[in-house]
Image 1 (cartoon, rainbow, N blue to C red):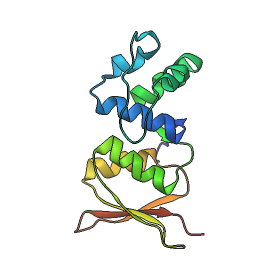
Image 2 (image 1 turned 135 degrees about the horizontal axis):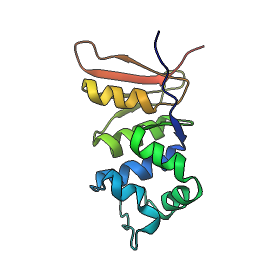
Image 3 (image 1 turned 30 degrees about the vertical axis):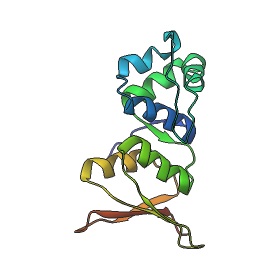
Amino acid sequence: MTETVKRIKLSQWDALLLESLRGLGWTNEELLAITSATELPVDNSPFEFDYQQLAALAAEKPEEYRQAVTEGYQIKYNTIRGIRSWISVALGLEPQLELEEGKEAVEVSLNADEKKRVEDVLSFGWVISGGTESGVYRIEPLQR
């Protein structure tokens, strides 16, 4: 019997903020102490992240925030561009977008650990396929 891990759910934007700070070298301890950080980084990326939003989340929901940082999280609702952005920020990869109506997808080469990370954070309604020999995966909306 498999046990389903109940993950804290973060908004796509909060997940990007968290992963951006990790990309800047922030440790879990530093992330957990964000509410007492005297100075937060200024983001000059195209995202223009405002880390005060993450500090506000940590102050408002400290236990949920702690769990998200230390045990992982799932994104509440993904968009195709949001998935692409998360992979770029969290994994440092540049996925390709397929935006043709009815065939929307994100395509990216992932190793086994990266694939597991993406699977863990994806919101309900998305599937990952492919990758057997090529290592290129396709992340797309679940077809009903």
